[in-house]
Image 1 (cartoon, one colour):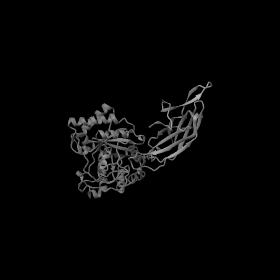
Image 2 (cartoon, helix red, strand yellow):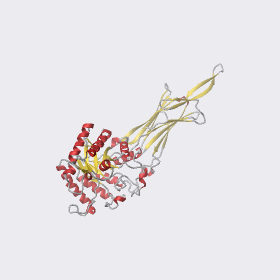
Image 3 (cartoon, one colour):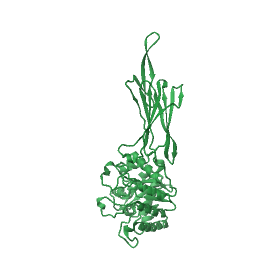
Image 4 (cartoon, helix red, strand yellow):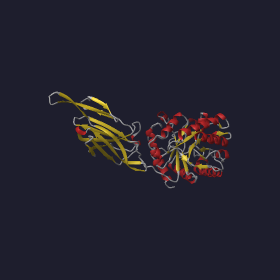
Length: 484
């Protein structure tokens, strides 16, 4: 909550300025005559605003609809009867106005709610109703004395939600979340443009807006990609949001990038230095994040999503991962729930399933040549996805490992190195179909579903609202989930 007290002088100067706990007071020096006719100096304190506060008064599913602004004014002997309160919505100038609900500022002329003659104090109160939200607000109080001099103080609200939090009780949905965005990263020719325009992942306003949107349409968790110092910092900022009570934050650990420094490659866990690097990374995550409020947990354990684990890990994976988990638990006290991104359009195997607490797949498109097991290839994508989930979920459950299905709206890579990759046309129908398939394969014990992605524009898998698509993917998301 930001505060600042400032004085506006209308044609005069202050003879003296003294500091107070909440700001500055000024003294007016007046010349009078005493009984003997000798000049004396009488100092009269100007009105001061103190204890200005914002308090929500009507909240429904975490959305604040109404609130109240209160403040006190001291030194009222020279106070005029007009006290003004301006209540102004504000959004960062760098983002399009269309990304926020339109709302006009309000101005109120106030009368005192109570008076304390003993302390020369008047108290003021103003109810603010029917807030649209999706932004912050500034309550600006102005008090003017009879000579025209003003004292001004303000209080900022925290981010006020636009949408009520929608709780889907039968399933926990985690959405893959990219924290790598900077203003410069938007120079690529992406297929669609975010409603927020070119944003940076470190902006608290963007974080608040994203949490508002996700949880307002039924999502529960952001699974934040963390692979370098910048994404580490931006991930930590998610936990500082005033909306953290409404969302969970999990971590996506990029296996090849963290352990090899590149997007793909073999990560041999039999190599001692590689295993120790992996253990050190997980220990760091445990110490920095696992105790944070609303860290994403499954079965009470903090989760880590191991991205590209299936195509990267080699060696005695089952034993080495157990060693790493045991070591992290011994050193930090946290027993991790590790999710292996190992599900492939191949036959499931022991080494791709058993080392993990749960297995999942990131990209839900068939990217191989058609086969007898998966006929029609990408042209028969959703039927093949159902076959894939049937095989892998059944095998995982036989080994006592959980299965987490994933849904995505489509796929196309704009990376030059991936120009020959298959294209899965994006549509709300495809997204709804994949969500329904995922719901059919929910693990009864954990009831968890992932979505790829919130904001990966390089592969056009985003469900974040855009200029071209509006809220269509979030609406599809909500409409499908509420029918469970």
